[in-house]
Length: 431
Image (cartoon, rainbow, N blue to C red; front, side):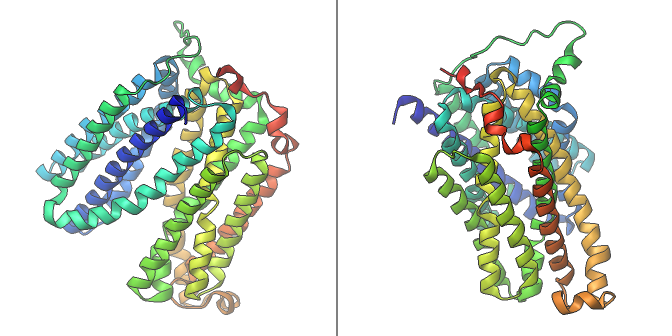
């Protein structure tokens, strides 16, 4: 492995440690809120506030990433998250109003977005074209890994050391990551600075959108992944109640959740092992079809073993499709615009994912579950049953069909199907 290869994997390992620390704190805050208040609504609002900065200020974040040395942007993002974490926990313990907590979380989301966008923009400066898929896949491994490790550690540590102790661990991991990133020899700018003239800030902020509008095939792919996020995020959060309703057993539910996380982890590892994908659009479409099909099958069966296999296969392609989409963005957009281009997708995600959460809950609680349990739709009872969870099962099937519809509409575009050959590859800028 060359020095540059070692550096990129060291960098990603550092980011993984930071991610585990952040997820550890997030789980601990969730436990603290439930124990102290008995409500979950503030947690949902905290998640929403965390997404708002990139939605409203994303274009400015993109300009900052493209103007700053990206290593500097990452360090600023990490340092800002440390300070916000300290203020957040102090506010929770001291009993200040929720308005202040939401404001701190929003500021933390600003630094988080800066760090995330800068990291995505830095990767293509550190690897060659044929290595990009494997590196992005390795990055995708970090999310399910943190999703497995953080809840386990939080459950073990919350009682003995409490929220403050867990946050101290998070802060220590952040400090370690800041020092480690600062010591790495990361590439500087490989492009000219953005010249933001007086009165042209808005024009620069909109440059990413103009680029996508000019390249419609890439825009259609962005819109498909926004639809993908909208369809997946809310329904996947219903896995816990669905498994609990269908099995009535906490232990079985835990094993099903383990199969769910294992699917995401194995999919990411398989993508790392595969390395370079010659036909990325085909793999993205095939993976999306598999996920959509498993969504439908998950809603149509109640056998525990079949549910375990279904949720495993449903999650299996997610890391691969995410990694390949990131690789396409990095290849098909100029290096000096990566910050603004990644921000566009971040803004679409910040709009579609929270909207999915806001829509899914009322649809299930206020309409689907009551209608199915009360037997209003007798023609559906023979398929989905009439007990608790039948409304969620119906939602899963509908979401699978909608995801298939999104795939079909997107693939109707010849430009999307031929994206890899029709658009120029800007990775040639990376010597």
